Amino acid sequence: MIVMLRRRPFLLVGLLLTILLIAFQRSEVINEDTLKHIPGHDTIKNLPGKVSDQWEQTFGPGSDKAKSQYLEKPLENAHKLKHPDAFLPHFDAVARMPGLTLKEAEAGCTWSREEKINFQYGYTTDFAVNRRNDSEISQRRAALHDFVKRGMVPWSAAKDKFKGRGIVTLGGNEEGKTFKRMLVALNELRRVGSQLPVEVHHWGDELSDENRELILSNYPNTYFHDLAGPDNVIKIWKHMMPNFQFKIAAMLNSRFAEPFLLDSDNLALFDPEELYESDTYKEYGTIFWPDIARTLPMNPIWPITNTKCRMDEYEQESGQLLIDKRKFWYHLQLALYYLDKDDDRLYYARIILGDKDAFRFAWHALKTKYGFPTKWLSSVGIVREDGEYCGHSFAQYHPDKSDGRPAFFHGGLLKSFTKPFVSHLHQNKGLFQYYKASPNPTNHSANPTEIQIGVMGAKSVPGEEEGAKVAFCTRFNDVEPRPLDEIAPGFEKHFQDIKGYWIILDVD
Image 1 (cartoon, helix red, strand yellow):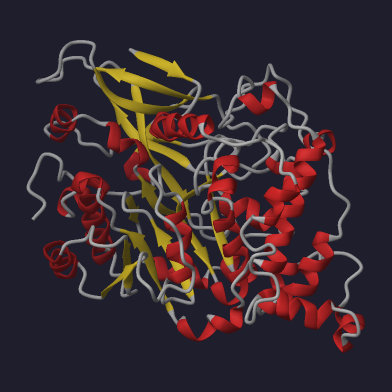
Image 2: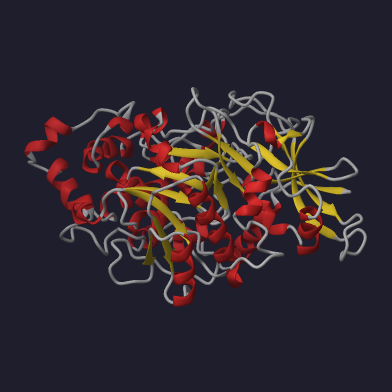
């Protein structure tokens, strides 16, 4: 039996914690006192070495550059700019754009409530029931652009600290589970022949010397970086609640100029270094992969970022992403702005979920196009003896239209599979059996299929009570499962070889 849920179960914990955050949230509307204390406002205004210095030199009264660099409107193709500081005139023009009202922003999407659209937050969400007023939205938008002008660390203070290409991942604790999944991901990188260096980010002493040695034995070309250390260019806080800011801070502070972010539960199907040579990355300097959900039209993040709701856009799935910091240093700092400091973290926790959409809406706020794959994701999973399908991973694809190979299997829901269920599958057909693909994978405006999340109950699973929950599952309704060997031949055997069954086997 599968019980349908409206929201994605592997994010239910995050949603619950968001509710706890809301309980502590201060006033919905920023007043002048709040604005004065936002990160990057009067407390750091005009300090030496801040972006505000460069801003004043470019646009200040009497500046020789003001006339030559002034833009009447934002650039249509700002993503083609070659240097972070080349964006400053563009940012100035973006800040002068007329602000969208909530009504104007949501008019970009015309779905009816009867359509089976998979939204991250449903129509019963607080901001959908209690619509945000335009005064609040205007103040939030002003605070955002004030941060862009006064709160960022300039590229000149950081550019000499970064070079080359490499993979960034987080080696957090979670009672060792994240660490064990990361070892499997490193084994897979080695299997596909990757020579890219890996940089494991952690907080303080959460990564022991023993675990460092184990990582190096699996993937020798590995560096370690402490996000709590004094040498970080971008300093962050560690919160009691989920620390979604770690991922963005890792990208910003990474030694790599072109970091590729890979989650610990994400398996690369070919050498990620190939992505740097993709047409998509060469054009945009970014690759953002899609999620299964869309953003509600009345979500205030649309007008705050002065963006009309887009029907051709899915939310972002940040289990993997590629960004050229040599161009988008400031964009990344804006993504962090949504998550790091308390006032903003508490507010934005209600409207974007963790780090996943911080990147997308930073690029939207700064009117910069990003690269994304031609093909939408597929679901990867199992078919039980009774015919029930359970999707546990996303297959994300090579971004170029001319390629289209599956590039990653991101196992978000594998975390929910119980040990007896994994053992049962391991003894039978395994975890990687089938996939479900959209009938219109290249049409991002189309609704590919009705997507639902369900609970799979135990049925003839040794060690589980009949009817007990053994897994959360993604379902693509009205799509027939097909053998996974069609798109990833022999992957189940590869998964065994890289010690993917660590939950039931010794990973050492």
